[in-house]
Amino acid sequence: MLDTVVQSPDIDALMNDIGRKAKAAARPLAFASTDAKNAALHAMANAILADKERILAENARDLEDAAGSDMLPSFIDRLTLTDKRVAEMADGIRAIAALKDPVGEVVSAWDRPNGLKIERVRTPLGVIGVIFESRPNVTADAGALCVKAGNAVILRCGSDSRRSSQAIYECMVRGLKAAGLPEHAIQLVPTTDRAAVGAMLRGLDGAIDVIIPRGGKSLVARVQNEARVPVFAHLEGLCHIYVDASADLDMAREIVVNAKMRRTGICGAVETILVDSAASDTHLVPLLEVLSGAGCEVRGSSSVVKAAPGTKAATEEDWSTEYLDAIVSVAVVDGIDGAIKHIQTYSSNHTEAVIAEDAAVVERFFTEVDSAILLHNASTQFADGGEFGMGAEIGIATGKMHARGPVGVEQLTSFKYRVHGTGQVRT
Image (cartoon, rainbow, N blue to C red; front, side, top):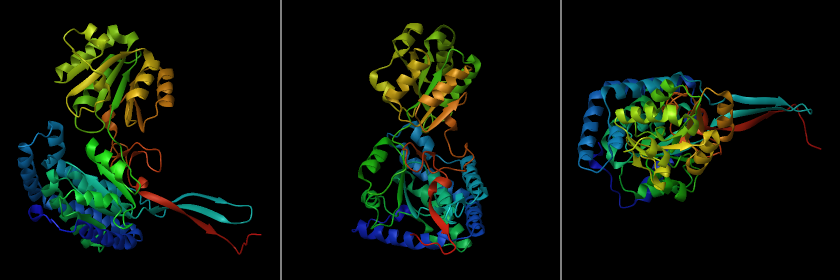
């Protein structure tokens, strides 16, 4: 139990020991059979369901602590587990087990004129460090994805979810043991000391191959600034929806409310809605009304305030704010050109959507907007690995190296080349 959290006088020694154990576990896990990995995943899912009451009880204690804090409602929502969410956690692990094993997959193959046969083959990354806040389900998602991709993982949860994460972690380890896989393939850092994060960012004496942060802007910024190993991350989710004059109004209403209000605290929640000036007379006020009716505060540009007196005027800061709350900024723009210009100026390159029936508008949006995920006539809340058919995802990456968009099992692998010869030598 994490009520007896380790507060080691030598955090580096503690963390380096965790790193050594992870590296030792990564090697046999990289060679583990698909059947063994899947058996471990199913055993993990079963253990989570069997321990549901304990997981919920520990989560209730975390929530009790959070109740006295200044945590936003959206962050409380991230922290909260329910019967349904625990069941979804188990289902997510089973969905990962059902995915094709990426390890050993021949991505491409070709023959050279000299007779050499060359293959590019997927291999595990090694040891992955995951640093996260508020979301205890990341313990299950990250652990399961890493195991499926043949990687060991070191998990460092936030103090706000420490009890819930520990209860879930113990279920994950039971699954590894049941399948005969090394128990240190998944480890949860047993201290809330922030120095543990610094140790992970330094790489644990070369043990960690990749860091993945899941949390607020300050955490992600620290990881990106201080990490000495590669990072898969997004700093924030400044997601936009552009409603073109050709958009079906009923569809637009449904999409914008879902994109903002389904879950306001996730990184795929829309933060800014852009309305084509050519549709301001027909679409703007109905969209504002449906958002307000759903309990969303609207902050609008001068054109929006003029069309709907009483709307709160947006400031320059609003266009670059990830609210993670029931607040949205709305602006009127000059068609697709204005939408692209606004997105290029303020986007975090996470997820953007266009609502339009004009194929030329959609084509320009898809071609010229450079974000990791682009959607047409669909909610930005689909920016999720599970919704992409990847099973659960360990995060969304907005960088352009190695992984971009949802980071699932394939993105948690690298590759090597296998070259078959028949005695060739180079002249």
